[in-house]
Image (cartoon, rainbow, N blue to C red; front, side):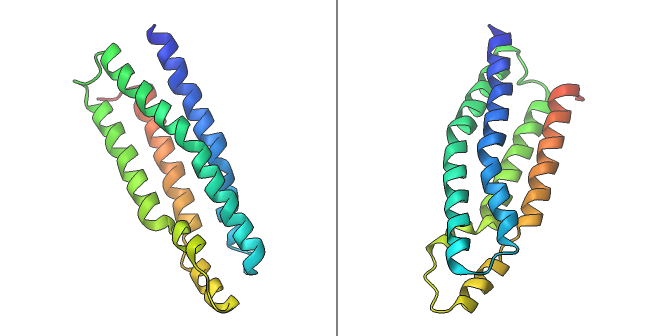
Amino acid sequence: MYRWVLLTHIWSVFGFLFAHGGSVFAALQLRKERRPEPARALLRLSEISVNASIPFLLLLTASGIALGFMGSWWGHRWVWASIAVFLLVSIVMGVLGGYRRVRGLDPATPEEFSRALDALHPNLLLAVGVAGLVILVWLMYFKPF
């Protein structure tokens, strides 16, 4: 049974990354797009993508918790380090993301909209997400402590 839950955990990661990829693509395209209508379409793509990734994130979390119990991993520090990395990345994404705020804007001018887009940090978010994923894979594969 452990192997099936582990497989579910791994496939949930792939599902999350695949679903969330649309949001990453949209964020990177928003760096160049300043016209309100195309930018709003990219913001909508980002929203749909994030919403599609949530079930995978929930399955990933549930299977990770189950694996912690099934493998008696809770006494190992790497599990707690993994949880800390996951929470830190989630908090950084939530605080720096800001896409929800921009989606809700109805600016009077294209310049205001452009300024709101300039306040976003897609490269930083990408770096945090990739670094978090690399650290999590390292922790879970090598179980260093």
